[in-house]
Amino acid sequence: MAAQTGSTEQQILDWLATQRPAMLTLLETLVNTDSGSYDKPGVDAVGAHILRFLGENGIDTEVTPDGAFGDAISATVGQGSGQISNRPILLMGHRDTVFPKGEPTRRPFKIEQGRAYGPGVADMKAGLVMNCFVLAAVKKFGGAPATVQALFTGDEEIGSPFSRKVIEQHARAARAVFNSEPGRASGAVVTGRKGGCFMRFDITGKAAHSGANFEMGISAINELAHKTLALHALSDPPKGITLNVGVVSGGQTVNTVAPWARGEVDLRFITPADRAATMAKVEAIMATSYVPGTSAKLEITGEFLPLVETGDGKALYQHYAAGLKELGNEPTALFTGGCADSGFASATGTPTICAVGPVGGRAHSPDEFMEVDTMVPRAQALALAVLRLPM
Image 1: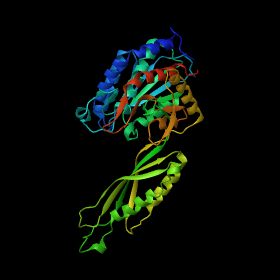
Image 2: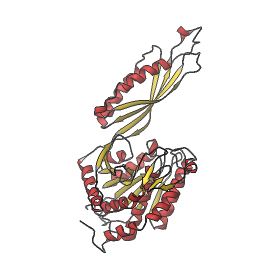
Image 3: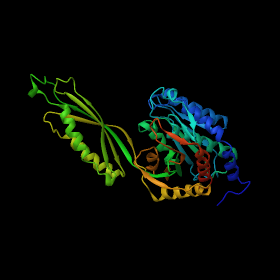
Image 4: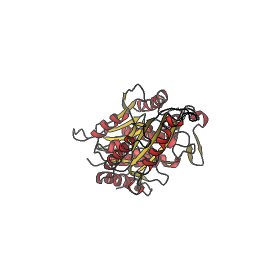
């Protein structure tokens, strides 16, 4: 149903249409602020910019602090109908990036030929800006059927070691979750994602002179090679299961049989059952000594849950897509092998969709971009989805 002239919907759509310059100004500020996942002061500096914007727009906020990673910020607008059973609508986004300290100085925010560039411009500072302005619109004009909340977390790129519990707490209480990761380059919204498990295994062998006492040595590197091949053999791409040993190290000197070695593994999967079955096989590989005398220790260093496609999730996508189509965009949905915080939200049982943010591409690279002309329409589509969510 099209928004009627003079309606709250139309007021919000019209106001958002005037906010592109302000959106880009805030985006430039966020992009030009260092915020690598392990740079807590930088991630919190981005949070300070967001808190300032929210405060200037009269939006209530709460900060959940952490000593190691960026604090979690929650923002709340309105009380909706006042019904106790009318759970809030949750918007999500993360402030951290994958880039090293100083990256914004080396390649600051810029706009060329309709695309914005800079570290984290699409993944996902444009989505943070969009969420801020949707909150501001609802605060200014009202019209939401329930309280609207937003989470601005600081450690997503490393598996949300601090924020996961905060996300789960908010998502469990919500009626729907919209995660504002970047829309795909095609404009698609994500309705399903793989889960990911990041692991490190350490192998102990025995050092020996590689010339004089070669037979006395036990090579941890040789054991690592056997384990790497065995792990790779567990991959089953048709089922969405892949294992990648992406980082290896080990050894002491070239003329010493390696007394230690280390590998880092990325496991991707579609369902929790596939994760459980594959992890059992991984643990069996770790327990096997292909080179007699070696031992291995496995540690999970980070994990994302999958965004499992469900009937409720598909219905939420259809609800969102209707507004996007009304605004003149042809909506599409896809499943992706990438991981995101939306999996933690979805696992609580709350309908969740992802990648509703402004359209972008080439994330995690110097070529990362955001399509400037999508900022306002994606904000408008999200606003319509919030305003029209059934009671």
